[in-house]
Length: 226
Image 1: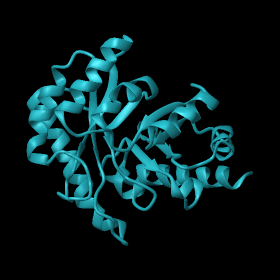
Image 2: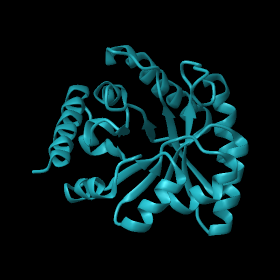
Image 3: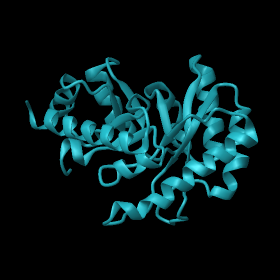
Image 4: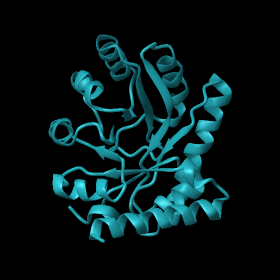
């Protein structure tokens, strides 16, 4: 077994254990292997080990990888996105995690119209109000959800967040719980299913799963440090 296959097995086992602790169905939580700056050979090792969902941050890098590896796996954009690059993102990705403003949503909707596609998206919420991170403020999320829900070529699946970094992953738990609670309020307000919560990375994905994550974005624990 390769090192990457071993790492994947360990991450999956930890995910399943977190689901058991929370009384959740492990089949309801998906692993996004964050492959930014990871070379093709190592991505192929992950594919050979059964990984079928990858997250990329940069459009050109993702374009090159998708051209080389094709659509045998699913590709998500997990990094921030400039409005002028909306068309390229719609062309490349199955799910865009970090929609944080209506102008970007409008650009994605227009691109999807041109491509004859309904684009799946998540709204990024900046729970901690950090200046260094993108995301809509929690108080502004209801308005953005309602605006996006009116765009016919976008399908809003849920929310995404990146809490502050803590040496103890337990300290991230309140931010994950707050996103889940926000999602629940938005469900009541809008009637939308909002089934997806993208939260949790290599250092805290187990806590995120216990708090309700349905998508965890794990890079270092699979591929090693960049």
